[in-house]
Amino acid sequence: MSATDVVHALLTTLFAGAAVYAARHALRAPGPAWRGRVDHFLHAAMAVAMAAMLWRPTLPRTAHAVFFTAAALWFTLTPVRRAGESHLVATTRRLPYALGMAAMVWMLRTPHVMHHHAPAVRESSTGSLVTAALALCLLACALRSLTRDMPTLRTVPDVSDVLPHPRPYGPF
Image (cartoon, rainbow, N blue to C red; front, side):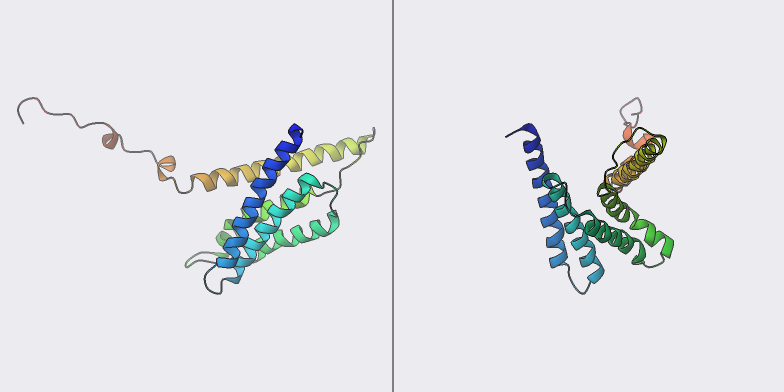
């Protein structure tokens, strides 16, 4: 077994675990939260597709591109507003999921054959810019998600809470 096969096996295990986790949440969601169920099933489908791309990079691209484009639109067009929340804020909250689905579409695009003429160079640099923009946006979303529940990373603690209080001289 080559090193590439080991990496593919590890990533397949990771994506399979993510797919099972998302499908489990979709099936066990309490009440009639159908939007949440669809969200979780879309995440499960994305994880399965990522695992399949490792072993079969020549999967039918058009059907997958249509599916994941629809999934990206699903996340941007079906926000659920919380009490006192604007439609824009609700849509923004779902933006990382839409970006993930858009990244799937971008990964499925037909690879361009490099020819030695100017248009191919422009396509290549445009492709690199889109890839970099998606990667940076997804990285920013991931970092925000990781630090969202860590209030000490967002606020500076009061110095008087950290340093010991000076004791007065004398017996008191």
